[in-house]
Image (cartoon, rainbow, N blue to C red; front, side, top):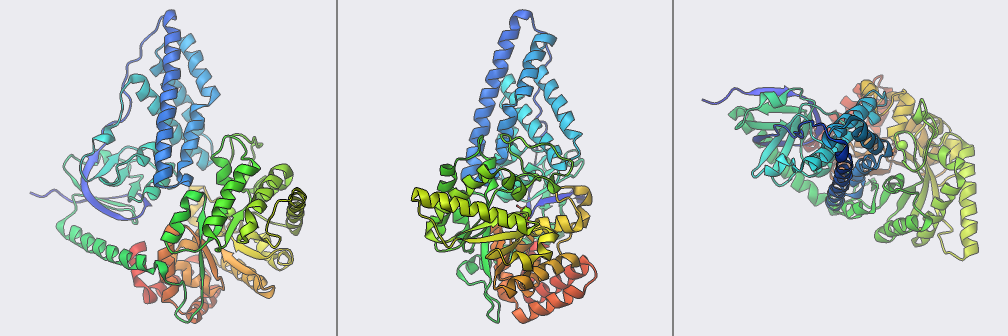
Length: 587
Ligand code: PEP
Ligand code: MG
């Protein structure tokens, strides 16, 4: 008799559909007994603990290397947080002190100290930092397995196609999943901003988290069907449902094949409006992906990741090498390098910043750079030195005043002067732009236009600052609406100001990668979109399916809408008519 179908709903954190038998991770928790130790054993236990740190460091570096080679440097940098935790002096000293004072074996003390630190982290109100509890637990679990001498690698036993079900999966476990066999995973715990979710998206398998007690509901031998778009997991799906999904899967594969063929086609509307599709990247390891997906050039190089993945501030030379590689490999296509955007939710362990009540409203991005002119000048010189191919552009983040642009341009002039004196060649005509990511910048775009060569609208922050919604706080995520009429008006205002001065206006927030939004953005007058390389085929398909005239009409009607959801509905309606295959993939 076939088993009863059971449908569970959680949070879809990585899209796609998959079906396979369950592989349940019973317990990956390290098992050990707490034991009292004699005074003469303390040194041995300390040595054992320190050795376990060395082995763990090695393991994490190996995983990081694999991720960097297989997925990209940006995602690999997640493991820098793990390596930093391993080097955390407070943690190490507390364990050593505990061994001497409490006289228990290293396993017991490590577990106790790690639990205490995790407890402190979990009480922090910042959701990004709270997520780092998972990183800490991941590292502690590895140290314990190494102390015990178990490999703890239950997941290594996977030997056939399966959907992994676990209470939780650590980022390092997710990164190490054998993607030729594991077709998806589902967990009791987890949230969309966790590193585990980021890893799942990066390795490209569907994932549903936050299913509460899925581990208790699955039995060995169960067949699972998961839908990462809908956040749904079906245990023992009916034949009817399997057929329906099988059909959807086939349709999706056919569409994916057709989309791949768009790679060498221009991103042009049916009535001939050309749209530049450039890539948002964080590392030179992603360069190949840009052309593979059919984009041309880089619209946003998030340079801070170069700083985040190092233990020291990168030198001028180190930076120049990276920027030059970008420029050379992509020339003559344009490469827009955004200057350092630290602060907010991105911090360096080696640059101590004062803790702030509202880091997104505080000492962030251009504000930090103007206050640390030496650091900023080093970056500006490095960018200039790499600019001799003539295809590099400089872009300042989080501008709110004209004075900031003047001051930044003043420092750029100083950097140019220093290079001229040193006889270093650079592009004298280098183009300079600002990100429009605060309502203030959008409102004074006409004034800013006097001082720059282009604008790039950063909707991720523009939405956050306009709607007063912390972009990493899941409690207010329901208010984070890029199609809010206020945002559309600010985009329109910026485009108009740019047009008057003949400036190019691009858009590089996540909104640029949502194919449903493509007609709206094109209709608002954006002619340059910068997006994650993997989103390019769908957005190109959307561009090629519409008429500019209709897109303009849509934008006009949307401007009259009173709510964000009304706008989304209009966008959906348009795509349903022009490129229904897109709905098949995103729904
Ligand atoms: C933005 O704010 O839209 C943007 C592209 O920058 P980031 O996401 O890096 O803040
Ligand atoms: Mg931003």
